[in-house]
Image (cartoon, rainbow, N blue to C red):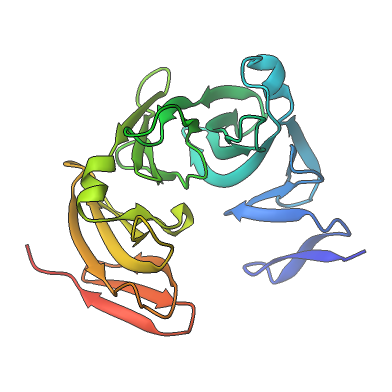
Length: 262
């Protein structure tokens, strides 16, 4: 077995140790044990003692129309005491995969919300329905009290200011096709109050050669930089500050863009 030590840099000491290799800290000061892809065990950050356990298999009982094996895709964060998690399902008999946003009480693990939306992947294609968010990478906007994200050519927003969260979807197929853009990897999303920054591919290809900026208000692509179809590397996550945009490719080259003054 592999021993893990949880070390506190502020206190300069080991808080607790575990021989369980499936412990992770996906969010600041939040430790989870994931013995299977369907189980979440929340641990006390100071002692490692389990505080609550949630099995994703219970979703099939609560939502019998969604019979699937669920697993965690991405931990979003805690908003208003609710832990939000992006879920993905296994491949269903029809070849499709489902997704959803799960909201658990952070203190107890009690389920509060499970949001999903059936959408048609391409308007020009008959059938081909998925449940979103799927393979998404939802980001929490604390200022506007909402969750936002992209998948394929769809933008989604979950409003948290109301008594019950509300999931809305916008199909951006026409806008993306105008620029021959497809979302390359939802895990590489970056956001500020006005824009979502992401890496795009040519719709018909797989080369991650485009840096794209989506306006959150107009849902238009305001800026695209295309390295070209022969770009020999793969672009990674975008980082931003007030004046510059940074992208590192998988061959170690850093690209720096200066933002234009408005």
